Length: 288
Image (cartoon, rainbow, N blue to C red; front, side, top):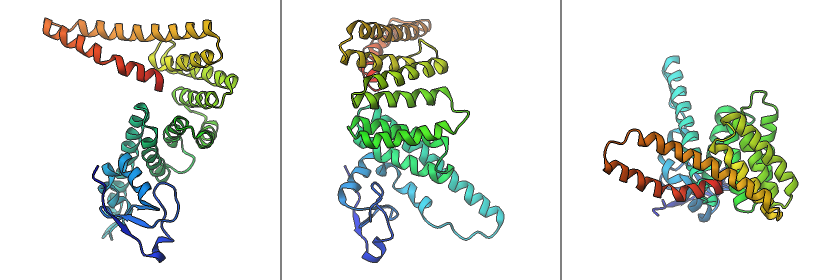
């Protein structure tokens, strides 16, 4: 890991700057971009591992003053370029955070998700639906780390945004209820967890269909709750439902691909791909 050098800040200036991760008073500055600040080396390393290495130089034009423009046309073009860069960073940081959560690397996901959230607030405002994906990733990562109070805060903010948005889509509703179900399961409140997971299945079914793999996650997590309650018959039936959905999904993929095969060599390639897909299947079910 090639962590960039840090530059100590002069004390008067440090009081006006905030740490990139915790928001506390900054004492250090990234020596590469010069526009990112930290309270200590630990937070700098965490940010670097998560996302800063990928966006270090991209932050410079975002966080430095715009040049003087000679005309209104130039000013408009400059503002459009700034907005484009900010939206690109929202998308990039969100994808990185999402990948870390999928891989079970919850600690690494948080800095990237925080960046996505802050860039989103700068562009869309503090109560926009565009912020919900970042809040949901932060909540899921916090649940994975056992930081349930923090997760509850993120989900409360998400609920507030969703409730005041009349056209919130079913996919977002599904993800919100899934995270709430996971939160209450982690707190041992199984009845509340099952309520939210049932809502997850309902909204996912409306958005994707009752037998889509996106819906299977709700069944899987609900089965885990019944398993913890020692209600094995119900748990087994739900696990079977998940297995059937994924079996149908892969059978359809194999059927589509087999129609295009023209040689034994291609059949061998398909067999190898099927073997590789076994581990991601398990991971998807655990993280969905």
